[in-house]
Image 1 (cartoon, rainbow, N blue to C red):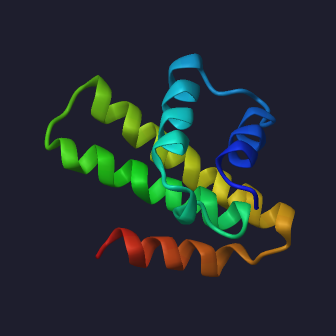
Image 2 (cartoon, rainbow, N blue to C red):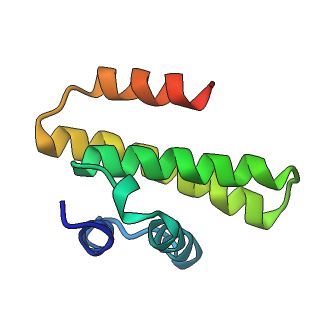
Length: 105
């Protein structure tokens, strides 16, 4: 994978498109991740982004629109991780178990 540009292009090709505010938040998370954390596959990239968005929401220590947008982004990224796994021929169950294990640490 070539990095953030490829991830952004992959996200922008999803249909249906997410609402504008969510799309902006997804792209913000992609741009904030160092290139070395993007992952070797789209499945890995989406999973890492989902965990990062969840961490961002929890780090706020509050409720409100900003935290909610990060939670929605986390949900979208994890959903996209499963979609990417299906496209890449990767079994979804191990992906889900790995993300769950990382999320509860």
